[in-house]
Length: 144
Image (cartoon, rainbow, N blue to C red; front, side, top):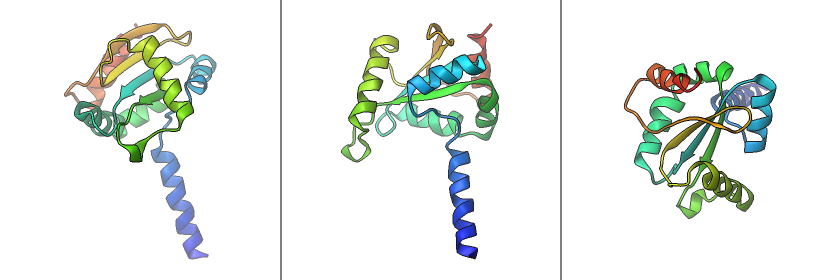
C-alpha cells in the first residue's frame, strides 16, 4: 500500500511538471478561445538546437514562468527533433510542419510566436539571456 501511495505521488508530480503544454494545436486554439488567453507557440529543436535547450531550461521550466503561464497563456510547442530516438508520431510531425509553413516561414529556432485566439500573430521573439520574469515581460509587451 505504501508503494502505491508513493507511485501515486510520483505520477501526480509528473502531471504537475507537465505544465499546461497542450498536446495539439487544435486544443491550444480551443482553450485560447474559451479562456480568452494568448497562445505562446514555440518552435524548437529539442535535441539539437542549443538556444532551444537553454530557453527550455532557463525559462519554460522555471517556477516563475510555470506559475505565471498557468493563468495567463496557452502553451504549445512545435518540436522538430532530429534524433531517431526522439522522433515524433507522423501525425504530430505533419501538424508541426503545417504550423511552421504558416508561422515560421524562415525556419528560425527557437522562435516564440504569440498569437491571439484567432491565430493572428501578435509578436515574435526568440532566445534571450534574461530572467523568467523579464521574458514574461517581453511576451506581455505583445499583448498591449
